[in-house]
Image (tube, rainbow, N blue to C red):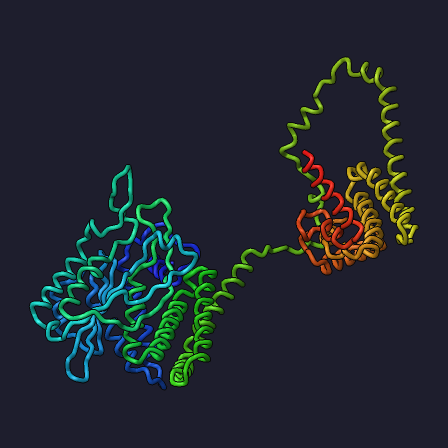
Length: 577
């Protein structure tokens, strides 16, 4: 993926995995995002059947003016020219980088002819501490502060020159007083890894403008500001581009002022969806499939939210929503389908690449296939042949042959005796099909389980099949006991049996009847697990009010009386001491 597209994707989509350092060419990323805003605005403005053409045209002029102004740095001559030609349908958007501040300058006509120019300013990037402390997105109201002055004062050439000079210097000259600071070795030093304080604009320039005119309360936008601070072996961490937030706020403010709050908000949301869909078209095939899916999901969620907003909107705004949906549905659908097709193609290609090709076995083979060369084993085999036997080996064999034979015989007898006893127990268990109907029967089953467990340890070393048969017999006895126990004490049903049916999937049983028996055991365990009230508790778990012991005592009058006597004796003993 191209580095520029990679950076643009990170700032617009904010994926989970982000770079650990600041972008190399931030200016190029800003220009690319600005051009994408323009493309999305032109795409929506060219669609037929809309009443928002005036808003799209105003937003396009605003973005073009912003593109012309935001060259590598503000030019005083360009600023003076733009200020002199300020019009109602083209507000001026300024991002003052070094002061972490943005300003929206717009003309506000009045019916009595007493026109004003409004200055709206807001912070462009939150502090790193605020971003790291937030559980999710930050909620900000825009603008942060606003002032207005009469148009006659604004268009005064001396004022325009002074304002242009101030903004040019503020955008290029960082001031240590307003920079972020950190304490090192007891001294306060500037911190380049954090956002600056926008006080030069919000607390110096705006009060001066208020003194020339007045402060003003403007309709505020509340936005969820998502950001991240990611630092990995770098001097400056990766932060979401402030210019992205500046453009979003400026365009939404312009659309709301041009079309009204409800219609402008709807148009802004469709504009962001158009920008995301165009980015999705460009990234399909150039991004990793998981990133394409992430962007597609983000776009689909926004469209779903627009459907909800449409249902909750007042009637006059609902018409705007419907017109926008009618004119843009095919536009969004094509982008989503193209991305989906690209991801599926990549997935099928990947599966084809990782699928091994298994050649068909030949019906007959040649004689050479029955011979092994063992080329690497020749030296080892030669050493074994020529290895000299110890001289006293034959004597030792003669001396120990009798005792070795006796020991081997005893071991064989012990081995066969153990398995004969185990087989007898398993046969007896299999032939005894009765279930526990009383306490003596239950005790008898418990004794059989103990005998079987004592006879089983040696069987586990003989192989998985014998061990599986023993485990099956133990569980068969346990289930008979459990059925009797839950009948006598229904409270047991509320607790997990302690065994999951999946634990027995590993048993290797050679006989079909054993497989059927295993299936019945697992069905019983599954039923017990699903019907229990406390899925994470057994009768041995915990010591709170919901444990088995506490509930069993609470359900027995005799045990409650015993508990009362114990507590009374305990209090009496404490009183004596």
